Amino acid sequence: MKKYFFLFVFAFSLLSSCTSEETTTYYLIRHAEKDRSDKTNRNPDLNKNGQERAKKWAERFKNVQFDAIYSTKYNRTMQTATPTAESKGLEILNYNPSKMYDSIFKIDTKGKTILVVGHSNTTPVFANKILGEKKYENMDDHNNASLYIVTISKDKKTSSIETVN
Image 1: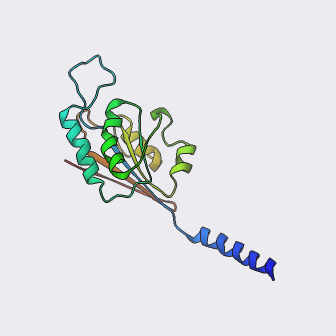
Image 2: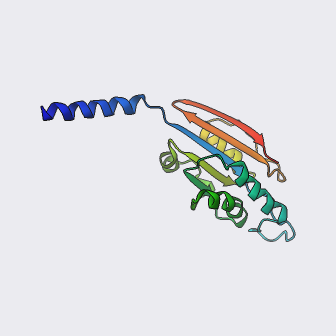
Image 3: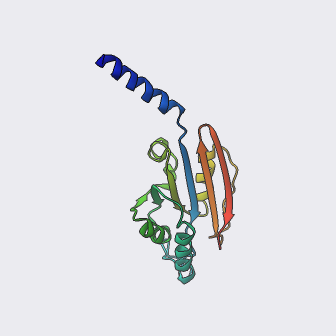
């Protein structure tokens, strides 16, 4: 009898895992406005407008339950992610933009809601890699207000862009 009970529990668990639908949602943004006063500085901080925008991103995401927040290691991306991470009580995880959306990242984020903070030349590329198609072009260097949302549900992938001012 005990054998049958365990067999039943195993079969039920297997069936329920096959029928449950995991949805993964990625929110991808570019860092906020950076200090452009020193053209030789390859790792600038956010300027005053950028600091304000970073706070606005946190406000925009107040009703989103993130499981993780990822950022490149640059000052401007980390500073953009910080207000949202602090409001959610999450640590910022770093990612290498040359290895974005690799097999490890896919596994680590499957079924979760994720914020990714990147750059004008990585944010659309990241969205494209998730989608598996070249849908988005690089962002204008002064565009700090676009939010890419990519959702994966079973085999269906959808995306949209909204402007957050």
